[in-house]
Length: 233
Image (tube, helix red, strand yellow):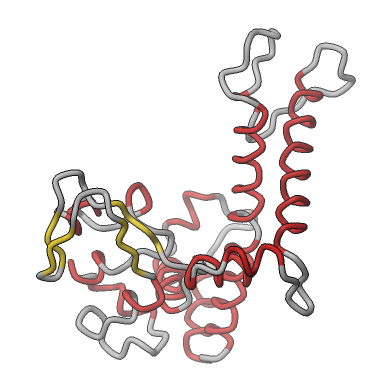
């Protein structure tokens, strides 16, 4: 992820792809290993759905692989690419986000106490609906994602074909504009004391806070009351 971040931010793909970084290695070899894991996920899905299989189970990609042997809607390469994306998004970003949230909570005894008091009211095996209803827990999660967004690089967006005006600048159609959650989510115009971990700030969420909260980018994951594409329109 360090190499990916460097490549995206500074356009160093040739460097990070072919030259080894101490303690990390060569990105070309890392990408080859990830590709191998992607195709392994495809093979596991096919084997699990085959009629001769001793065990039948479903994976994230089962819908992409027909059980009746008919032509697959997606090539193995496409499914493998999706698997690689899930491997990265489901491990690195999740691990980083959780670690920083734990760090932030343990660094603030009062926040830790409030969170533990609320979680003590949970049932023995709380489900999704119950946890979603825990107000302070969700404030802690949102504040953790705001202060320590897990996306490691800029978030590129393509300008509409007709062009757009952003921040007083005219942008030609189809050019790419990038921002990053780390800076936009610490904008003092949207968040008071932006460098501090304050879960309670989410009790009264302002439109500016919603517009500046993009830990995983915009679109479907955007919590803004209006489509995120309005940034470029």
